[in-house]
Structures are given as C-alpha cells and as structure tokens.
Image 1 (cartoon, rainbow, N blue to C red):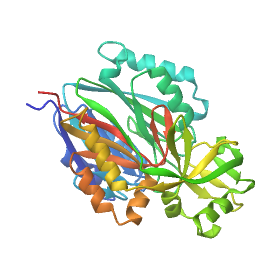
Image 2 (tube, rainbow, N blue to C red):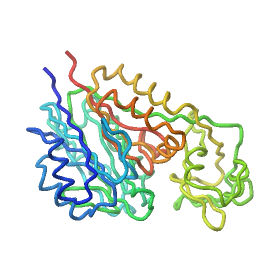
Image 3 (cartoon, rainbow, N blue to C red):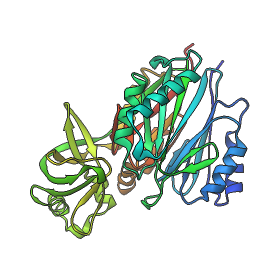
Image 4 (cartoon, rainbow, N blue to C red):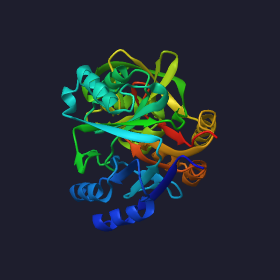
Length: 378
C-alpha cells in the first residue's frame, strides 16, 4: 500500500474563480498535508490569494513565477500549476519573513526555534526534515538570508527559488495564508518519514576566457568594469557581438562562472544598462575573477541528475522543482522543450522558473534545484 498520494494540475483560465475551481477539481483529495502552487504574475493576486485560502484548509505554499512546469504538460506560461500531497507521514510548518532588508542571523535563529517547536519531537532532525524557501526575487536579499537560515537550521537541507514575474522585473510575490506579499519570504519546513533527496544540477563548464572584476557594487549586483573597461563592452566583445545585441537569450547561453572551493558556480546576467554596466542575479564583488561559461548538453545533464537521485529515492512520487528562467530560455532557443518534458515526465513534478535558486547555503543561478519526495520503502 502506498504511503503517499500526489495529484498535480494546471489551469490556463484567466479568471481567478474559474482558475481555482479547475485546480481544485484536478488536485483535491481527502486529508491533504500540503498544496504547492506556482502562478503567473498576470493574475489578480489579491483575488487569487483569497480564493486559494478559501479552497484549501491545509497549508498552502507558493509564489509568483517567470514560467511554470507540471506533470504531463511540461513548460507553461501565464498559468497556475499545483500539486497536492496526502500522507500521514508528512506535516508542513510555515514561517513568514517580511521587511527583508532588516533580516538578521538572529531572525533566522528565532525561526529555527519556532519551527522546531511545532514538530512532533520538538527539535530539528536532518534525516526527516527539509525546508522549501520561496523569496521575493527582486529584493537582492537571497545571499544573506539563505546563509543565515542554513546556519540556524544546521544540517536540515534548505532549498528553494526566487519568485519571478514573467520577466517583467517589476514585482514578485510569495503567498502566505491568503495573501501575496512582496518584500517577503516563506520557509516551509517539511517533517516526514518518507524518503527524500535534494536535486541540484547545472550544465555549464568554464572556458579559458577570464574576466577580472575591476569595479562593482555587490549590494545592487552591478559590475561596472571588467579588465578596466566597461563591463558590457568587454562581455559583448568576448561573445563576438555588438553591445546593443546583448539580450536575455545571449545571457542565458553565456553566463559567467565563479570558481570557489574547487567548484564552479554560475553567475547569471540579468541585464546590461545604458551606461555599459552589467547587472547580475547574484552579488559580484570587486577583485573576483569570473570565466565565460559554455553549456554542455542540458537534456542529458538533467536526465543524469534525475537518474542519480534514484539511489536515495528509488520510488519517486513528486519532484518539486526550481529552475532558473535562463535555463528555460536556453531550452526554448535550442528547440529542446519536448526533450526536457520527456525527461521530467518520468515522475510527477511541479515547479516554477525562478530569478535564482537557493541550495547549500548559497544563492545560485542557472541551475535546476529541488526536492524529490518518494514513497516509503517496502
């Protein structure tokens, strides 16, 4: 007998009432432990928050997106995707954070103590708990918050994504108890005896082309000059294009890579400014060396990562995915959307396209990061 039941669904209905009704019809089941959803920012969020709160009595966790994906449908735009989980071996506890600029390590410690007190044993246990962290993707607070939270929660893994707004770069929001909030983040602590594993993969390798960051503002994630010249000019020259040709597709295909502790970390580009600076999706400090990135086979990379996860979760039931929107742009530019869907469709999944991902106490870019939750061992 299975110890977990998962249902996934999607709606493209533009009216909130119709959209939520369609989701309820697709995913509702008795005694749900949690509902997860990811919604396009094109919806009336005030009405959507209220409707979701009325539709489900269990914890509901979600945020706005820069694209969505779900079992049987693959990549979506302008939709709401959702999943429900029913299991007597799973409980979910949530914590809201607001005014992100004032968040401190002490706040992380308070959150860890409060969430631990809600668990069955009253303490944090890494073998039976993980955190899903959803955060406003435009407040540039992810590095500080994920480092503090992971420090406070110890070995309990925390993964997640930065909320999007369909690449408008205007307003991103997380959902909590019937309301969508900006300048906010939500941490959902999953307490379970079901098997689970963290999934994290990226397909870029670093080339020999190195850039020295000669002036930058980490707080705004802006690099003004590389190699002593305007950053956008140097980057465009390395790609063999004109500066005015730089766009989201080129950024997705050629991120920069930071080498740290023997590992490569992708640093995705958000935009080029009119005065020749480059704005990143992660903090970049003056004095660092970055390398031009080149992508390997993105489909094979994802397939291998999912296959490797079966060691820890041989009976996967749900993948909760946070995929950088730049990966999606690369997949679409390469005509690989169907191939990616075929890989993902080997298990139930729900997820969203992000403005960055959180894993291993770091804010990272252009990864596929998430949690795979499995059925109990026989």
